[in-house]
Length: 287
Ligand SMILES: [Zn+2]
Image (cartoon, rainbow, N blue to C red; front, top):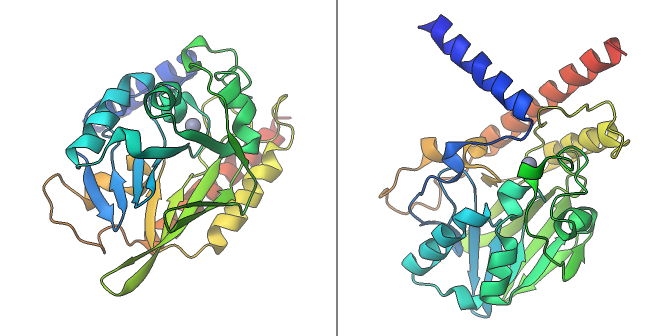
């Protein structure tokens, strides 16, 4: 059984490496929308996170998923009783196709402003062609989208009394971004982090990429910064990264404490940092 499992994993991994561009059936698998905490809702698929943050002056949508998952997001928003036309701001944790390929359609549908880290603007506006790893891969391309507001580290996004802070966490892409906000619920304030976890894509050399020479330092800085952050409610770009399916099953009652997991967050950051350090050491040895 274990041998078969290992064989399966190695076949999957090599298929991945040959193809270069990650893919997963979990990305397009539907998942029922639900309330995460306060004014934050899950409207993503089984694995691709999309977060709807509602305010009295309109809503913010973080991460679009793929172009083909836009109808699932729309259905989720409406099932929760909200309107797509109330979407005022579209943002993303980073400019890879699995999080932004649906932005062009969503922008057309809602007329919302696209807000993105200044370092990932070229990715969005080139439809993925300027990516330091996947730029040559046709499967990683998407409909380009124009960015209305370019974020720097520490910038605030404000709408209807909700204030979101952008944190520049480069490495995975040049402009990878985490978002934090405070949500008050039942007399308690929760510090929520929609974190871009600093994973490394197949084919990336963390010691240096021709189009991203400073990648080693970028990752190191991100791990340093993420370890310093105090996060109560931990969310991320992919469901699997923060254990959504271990923490929540469809139909579970609303519980503001459900995604409170500071320990899990720190352990995940440290695990990714170890992977990075090991890979960096191995790359430097073979140079
Ligand atoms: Zn990515």
